[in-house]
Amino acid sequence: MLFDPLTLRGLTIRNRVWLPPMCQYSVTARDGCATDWHLVHYGARATEGFGLLVIEATGVVPEGRITVQDLGLWDDSQIDGLAKVARFCQTYGAAVAIQLAHSGRKGSTWPDQPTASAGVQPIDAGGYQPVGPTDTAFPGLAAPRALTTEEVAAIPAAFADAARRADAAGIDVVEIHAAHGYLLHQFYSPLTNTRGDCYGGDFTGRTRLAREVVAAVRAVWPESKPLFVRVSATEWVEDGWSVDDTVELARAFKDLGADFIDVSSGGNLVAPIPLGPGYQVAFAERVRQEAGLPVSAVGLITDPRQADQILRTGQADAVMIGREALRNPGWPEQAAATLGAPSPMAGPYRRGALPRK
Ligand SMILES: Cc1cc2nc3c(=O)[nH]c(=O)nc-3n(C[C@H](O)[C@H](O)[C@H](O)COP(=O)(O)O)c2cc1C
Image 1 (cartoon, rainbow, N blue to C red):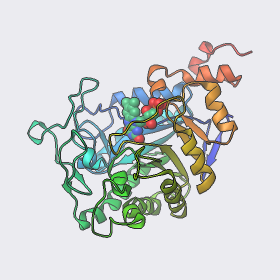
Image 2: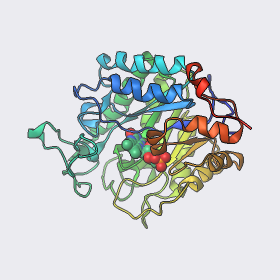
Image 3: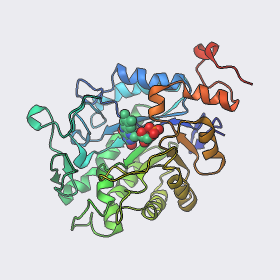
Image 4: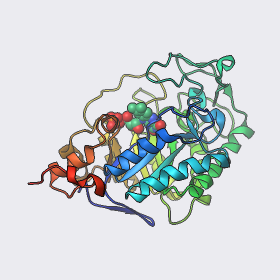
């Protein structure tokens, strides 16, 4: 099951072992353009056999980056670097997605990993002014400037323009980042959106921005290419955004032409999260069953048999292997050997394939 292909619209993905978006904060020129780091990082996971690589959160406007060293797609000059990464990965059989993102009130944090200071990079030290649904700060970060209604209404077009550039770069899938307490999540959460205009208030008002973004991207993204949305299924706090809300929003995304939901959780507030192997899988299962869309499961999935079981029991359609893939890019080969599937590695690596029973 883990190594069965999956077809979404006109795209067939060779297996269901996927790389989730993981910020590399490695655009040292701070121009949003992909570098050799991105070619090597994504290229390595393509040659080791991942089915789909979701390129990290990529800012649709400069102030929508998390740090000044994030990727961007707000300008045509940013197309070529991503095209090179996509071409290489596709040559070795991987499909390539990109996560289009706006950081909102969680913008302008420090880029240098893992020594980054807590808090924000001040404007006079090269940072920028973050924006948000209100001027309330995420704990420990700078106060954002509250967006006007007109500014909010312009955000879907920025996502759509970035999607057009992603298509020009030859990318196969766009994933809209509506999770982890970034801008779209800040808007749909009742705890961070206290606006009084048409982008606040009840469920319809609070989810309006996310729904407008999905509709705007779908309108420009080619018919043959799948559209994903990453959501935070719960905020892990009483009175916060809930799994029931997520199911309802996923149904709305489906009606707007989204094809797939990448189900994560948390990130909008400081909350205790009961971490453990596959701790978010049950949320993926609920969205899959109740919204009727294919889904991926992510979060502390590291055991090939567990990953395979998640798919066999109908809890998800694909699994994402995040931090484990940073430690161990050869995870797909190890999983394939464990499960008796053919080697997913690129030809030049096959002499290193593990023995099969
Ligand atoms: C270094 C790093 C960067 C990340 N960047 C992003 C990101 O750009 N977008 C996103 O939605 N999640 C991001 N995440 C979350 C991962 O996609 C994933 O959901 C999380 O790490 C849980 O999966 P895991 O336990 O397999 O690592 C990041 C995680 C890490 C470790």
